Length: 295
Image (cartoon, rainbow, N blue to C red; front, top):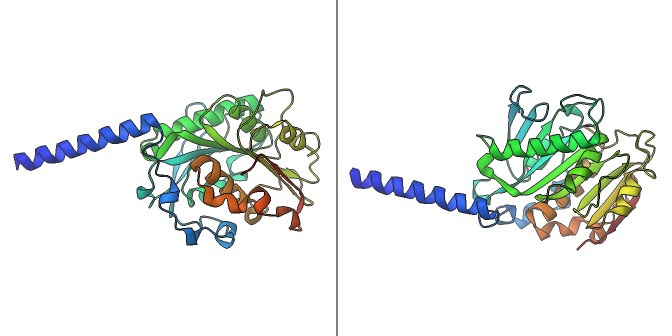
């Protein structure tokens, strides 16, 4: 019995040490989803399905406002059967000015079902500006990294951010200040002034008839200034809310999932749905499509 106990303790200690070393390195523990998503599961139909329809089952955990440090609370969405995938990418999603978590929450189950740990958040106040939203995105990423339920699942060196409107501006700002952020999706982003040099891989979403953050004055400017891999889709006849819950989830989820898989997990199998390999410009719901520096 003593021998068995000692062996069990040694195995546990050794496993914890290996895991800790992998987390510190940020690489070896990350087998990534390429090791546990079958090639046959990666197809256009599967990526276009809405909701938590990916290869993994999804569970959620509420983060109360009182327990959130640096943001306004939210919901963690995470895969429950991805234990063989190594460490997973973590993504934070923030809404826009005078808006709440429910406007961007659809990204949570959608991305989690494809092997990401995602936190969709409320802001401290609905009036917070883009720089504050960038800080809150970063705080939300810190939260999932240290969370008792999902912290051990997240690769702290492979992170991403999504934001709508001023939240999109926040995602752009965060990408200039936190190197572990490997990919962003600014949707109908709004930012006045300069957020710095942005070379993080960015999939930008514009809305053709956006009168709050007009595409030509915001998305196009941010897109043209981005120096890293980039892709842009403008939603035909879309208003400022064209990428929110209930709007175009099938259209935007497919390239969104593929973008995050490619640049957070480094899974090149998703290249087939990006840039020159997928002509989103031929879809009637897309009024403008562009890309540059893509594989």
